[in-house]
Length: 525
Image (cartoon, rainbow, N blue to C red; front, top):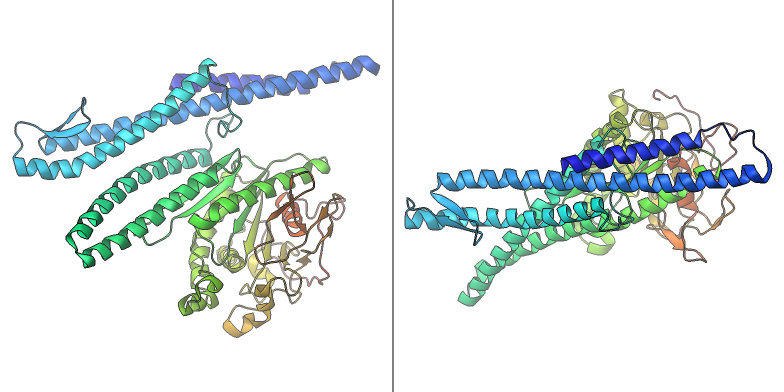
C-alpha cells in the first residue's frame, strides 16, 4: 500500500505539473482569429482532463495512505494484545476469534483474563474489518475497478501530507477506536441493566441508566462528528479532545479545506447552547456555504486564492437559558468563566493556524457568547505580543470586555461588529448593560465599524435577505433556483473571510451600517 501511495502521488503530481506547464505556454500567444480561439478551447479541454486525472491519482494516493496507516495500527494493537495475553497465560484462537487459556492457566485466572482481553480483541477485529474495507476501496480505485467518487477525500499535496492532514487522519482514527470501545461499553452496561431490572435492584438500575445515558450521549457526539465530516467534499478534523469523564462534552474543530495551504482562513466561534452533538454538523454546513461565497467573491474580482473556513467547537459555552430555564445556566450566561476557558483553548489554536500557514490572511468570527470568547482570546494573545489574526467580526454580541479595540491587537478598522435590526435579536440589545456586569463598553456604541445585516443588494448584484433572529447571521436561504444564498450578514462575513474587505482601489465590498469609526492605536500586524 505504501508503494501504491508513492506511485499514485508521483502520477498525480506529474499530471498536474503538465497541466500547469500547458497553461504557461507562450507559443500560441501570437495566433489570432478562429484558429487562436480553437487552440484556446483545445488547451482548456486538455487541461481540464489533466487536472481531473491528477486529482483522481492524488485521491487514490490518499486512500492507499489511510489504508496503510490502518493496517499498521491493527498490527501494532494485535502484537500488544498477544504479548499481554501471553503474560496472563492466555492465547488467541484465530479460528474462533476468542481469547482462550493455555495449559498453564488456572481456571479462575483464566476467567478474569478473558474478561480483560476479549473486549480488546473484539475492538481490534472491528477495526480490522473497517481497514479491510478501506484497503479494498483503495485497491479497486487504483486498478480502475471502482470509479473514484467526487468525495474520495482530501488530496495529497505536492510534498505529501501536511500537518493538518496528518493530524486529521490521527483524530479520525481515534474517533473510530473510541467508538468501538464505547459500543462495547454500552453493550456491557445494557446487559448489567437488564440483570438489575430482572433482580428488581432499582438503585443499581438507576445508576446504570445514568451511565447508559452518558455513554449514549457520547456516541451521539461521535455520530455528529462523522456527519459533520460528510457535509463538504474536503473536510479535516483538525482538533479533538475526548474527556475521560463521560459527562463532559467532546471538543472539536472541523476545517472545510486545508488551512495549511490556503491564502485565506476564517474561524467561527459559536455561542450559547452550542454543542458538538447538536450544533457541529450545522456549523460545518454554514462553513461550507461561507467558503463557497467567499471564493465566488474572489473570482468575481478576478483574484486568485483559496479560502478555508473552520467550525471551532473547542469549548463548552453555556446552555441556552430559554431552553433550560435553569438559574445555574442564567448565572453561567452572565459571567465570563466559560468564555475565559474557551479563550485559553482558542488562542493557541489560532497560533497553530498561523504557524502552519505563516502568510495566510486569518479572520476570527465570534457569534453571541462566542464573540466574548473570541475577544478574550485576542486580548490574551495581544498581552503576549502575539498577533496571528488579521480581521475579526463579532455579531449578535452581548459584550466583548473591551475598553478600546486596540486591546484586540488588530489594525484600525479591522475589527467589526454586526447586529440584527432592533427587535429581531434580543442579545445585542442587552449590550448597553455590558458595563454593569464587567463586560466592557457597549460594542455597538461606535468603537468599531458596524456591518449591515439588513436585506438589500450586495455589491455582487445579489438581492440578499436580512437577519430576523439570533441564529440567522451565518445561515443561508434557498434561492429561486434552489441554490443556497447567504444573507447580507453572511455576505459581509464572506468578504472578510476572503481578505477583500480593504482592497486598495478595489471598491467598497462590505455593506456597512451607519456607524462612525473612532481611530485607536494599533500595536499588532
